[in-house]
Length: 431
Image (cartoon, rainbow, N blue to C red; front, side, top):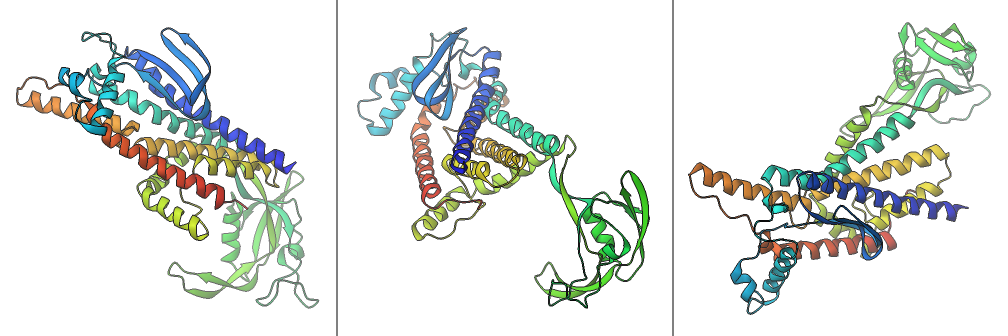
């Protein structure tokens, strides 16, 4: 049964990834079509085509390997220069051939020099909108997932409902109840499991942390607990016992402090958060993931070192899709209530979409951020020419950056390979 649950968890992550990719590409597709760009294909996955259908000039389909996706827009780059088309392969070597291949593939999507339905002819702001549409869809999807998690399901919180009562006051040497140990104040005063603490000494308490703060700050002082029992409120006088506890300061030093103790344990329940809590958590995660992304080469290197040496990996480090699938399987197979497992899966999928959002903003081709950088450079050149009353410059020919794109692709391939190997042989585990 546990193996079946693990497999289901992995399958759910594959489906979740496919949905995330589909939404990402839809984020590119919709504005591109809205701006009149001719889109040849909208594909989810890579490899052989499993199914496709052409609708209004665009082929929509699924491919065999659901680890990515793409749309093909006409005229991503301006037409090839005449000279390049004649001698691009002749003497330039490997990278010159790559540039020419990219130009020829791009030229095949053009319908002549006066073709208006091409990407490179769009105003700069429209090109940026098209390229940012994909990552933004991942961010919005993450916000929706976090909203379902926090507002629809809630956050596990220690509530003010009493779940259990201590029998005695603990000592610094033992938590066991000796015969001579004094009874715990809450039990002695008549508080019962199932009571809900409404207020303490006239101060309303919304959660167990607030109740604990009042109790700990009042050793030896009689407090009036208002509790709700069977639909009615009762007032109970409770005097917290004084116990010694260790307190660790921010600088790491430990001191002993006298605090109050009554001996109640809280019931844990899902508490629904305001609707804006989901978007807030998504934004907070963007900052955390960005902190990982800018250190990605160093973190992948350390992951590789940990793989070779067998050292324990950083649980907050980068993962491959294999690692994400493995964690999803562990969440599904965990010995916990089904709601906990659903919450864990939603959190994992939302975090994956945040990673897709941040990663695709890196200003390097072939990532979306690289295309945004090219559009901004084109806009800067045009603004400069306009400022000095010069003729409009030619569109930026990003095919010249194919060697850099190739190098980035190889780097991503190597880092992805390292992470996949690490996730197989030295995985991060929830157990």
